Image 1: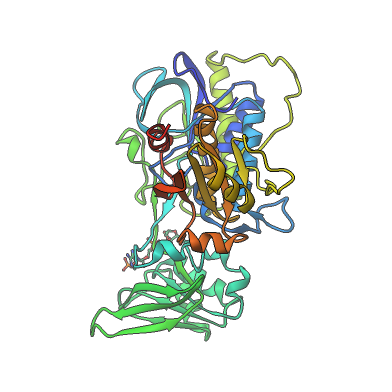
Image 2: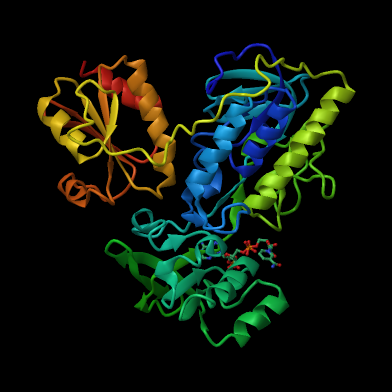
Length: 459
Ligand code: NDP
């Protein structure tokens, strides 16, 4: 059960958000037989899966001694939540009516009623929007030094951090463990971090502060090599050779859809009872970064998701509001992660002319030359989070079109020649071909309907 087909009726608990907090809440609520409904978020507040979807290796999440790719970790959490009976809807919540009982949630495409709600919409790390940012995102540019700092490319390299708050200072100090030198780029003439943090930065001779300075653009080849910076006073422009550029310019909490209904603290986070998930509205709980001004780690988000689920379960049962499902089988069937990180490339032996989805250059060559159907090619890479969001969407489109289109995945790390020939400079890129002609190309995650419409025009 992946997608809820039933928008009607009253849910026990709706979880808004699909990061570690949301999925952990879902796992707990599902195991309490509440059959939660989780709304993943789609276009607002980042991509489904949250901030870990744009991280490479997560090395501090317990249980993964050798690290785990952020998107893979999120896939595993999703599979675990679904295995225990969580229903998923890929949509954004536009608003919540907290006065109505049950609560009314308006989605992009419908309304949902629920007795309890857990808000786990996270916060999106702010980006600078410099020239070439998208090209070097996760290829040198990152919003999380703590998560990504130990990446091999950053070892003994010069690195840069942008920002002047506690996060920037903490990250600059942290990165000196790995980099040969850290450039701290501050747009004004002062740091706004705490005094102790400033002292630490100033005492560290591996850190150079560039005052009154902004970053203009990123440059490099496959990986970031240098940044262009400008002095905001004398307008002097120069290049600094760095392999890493880390943003620490604050976060924006994904709370817009709440309007003014729930108490928010002075920094913009949802106000909860100290150390607890209850918000100012009874029956609405919060978990993860959206209510955490301080720790903001995957594991703390997961822990708070657990608390929110347990609190909502108690709250529902105290009021006799829970409608428990009865499981047909006490032991649910084993999970499957629909993104499948270890999909095999097809070979001459395993290739199937009629298969709906195959991977690799052999399949592409065969279908490109011989298929009479439209073919949809996704160019992906193993650490590309958005690719893992998009792949199951494309598979669904193909299956809904009953095999009238065929899908192929090309891993650009493995098939660099093909990626070059196709002019791919970022993942995910999707190309739609018919009769050897490129009909349409998309970059990034798009709604299923866009792909469907373009394909339907060709069949
Ligand atoms: P802050 O909002 O405190 O700081 C953001 C920094 O980014 C500011 O220096 C700001 O500059 C700069 N900035 C914002 N936009 C831009 C831009 N477009 N270009 C260049 N610079 C920009 O965020 P933090 O994440 O640092 O901290 C958030 C909260 O978390 C704070 O309360 C902090 O104290 C706390 N925290 C505490 C830590 C600790 O105690 N160990 C560690 C991390 C965070 P300007 O100053 O000019 O506005």
